[in-house]
Amino acid sequence: PPNLPSSLVELRIHDNRIRKVPKGVFSGLRNMNCI
Image (cartoon, rainbow, N blue to C red; front, side, top):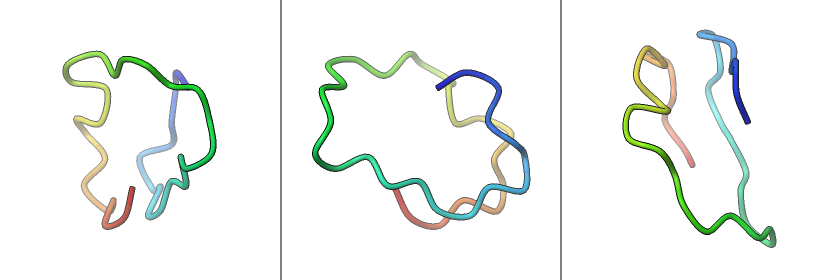
């Protein structure tokens, strides 16, 4: 999803229909530790 908050720590993406992840989509998410 676009416009993820920079404070995001975990993003659960299992059981969905994502086929492509654009380059750089997670850049700036320095607190992210689990996808």
